[in-house]
Amino acid sequence: MRLNDCHNSEDFRRLAKLRLPGPVFHYIDGGADDEATLRRNTAAFDDCDLVPNVLAGVQDIDMSTTVMGRKIAMPLFLSPTALQRLFHWQGERAVGRAAEKFGTYFGISSLATVSIEEIGADYACPKMFQLYIHKDKGLNRAMVEQCKAAKFDALTLTVDTIVGGNRERCLHTGFTSPPRITPHSFLSYAAKPAWGLNYLLREKFELPNLSGHVAEGSNVALSVGEYFSTMLDQSLDWETAAQIRAEWGGEFCLKGIMSVDDARRAADIGATAIMVSNHGGRQLDGSRAPFDQLAEIVDAVGDRLDVICDGGIRRGSHVLKALSVGAKACSGGRLYLYALAAAGQQGVEQALGNLRAEIERDMKLMGVTSVDQLNRNNLRWR
Image (tube, rainbow, N blue to C red; front, side, top):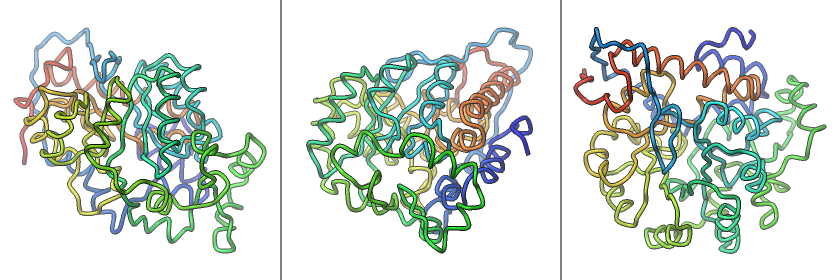
């Protein structure tokens, strides 16, 4: 299978599986417990149908939107995800270059493998930083100050990782950061020599935004679930979130909002955006899908902040359905991580190109020329 054979997310997934050691692939691919929520995140879109209009004169399409204070060229952006140089040696650099080419947001995680300073200096497209609140308060302050200095456009506080989810695939494979090669996992890594050579011979793997403060994740191997459960501050509350918003002073997003009550609280503390998200089905299995929750959250706070539908996006039609409900934009991780693992920057660009073409084609088939023409009249639920 080659990159030219990848026409959709599932194609990139298959190619990524061919390129990655088993533990690394299953870290991207897996969810919590029985993975019911992981599956539902995408399946939720199948319960809603688009109702097109015709004869609308759709030669010229404008798919731009403004979200978190920045105009982006398409209503889809790349969620922050951790550990990207484990998936491909180019890591966040490849994702940032692809986002820049397509004129959209991308985000880096506190657990990124490229520094805040480098991303701020080298990429002109809109950038968000995903902040995990650690027990080390000095580390938290340092990351916020570094993002200010690097002129990031938005700070995104992740609020759904108060403990690590039960990621059973990682328990079965023994996946850790950095990778811990065991007798059980040795063959999985040995079977992918190209990945191994890149990991061993290119720049040393580390989490540069954390490594000056904590050894875990860079020099001490932990699973991501262990990291969340042992390193993050479980006392994180609304008061702390409000303090971080005030300290940051700019566009402030809460990632992991799933209830109307929490959406209202987010608006009350001055958040300018929320990502309706269940962490890709990696945390609370059995929780609702973002698309299932989207309408009631938009109705509650859509006039007070930007509502972003995060997770489960695999098709341009999914984006149109979320925008018709009232989301300002959509975002996702796996939609580009499979492509990154498959072919680095070229893979991410091809995945974004496929999705952009789907959004444009589907807008024309829906009879709309701009995203603000999409509304719930376009939808019917089964």
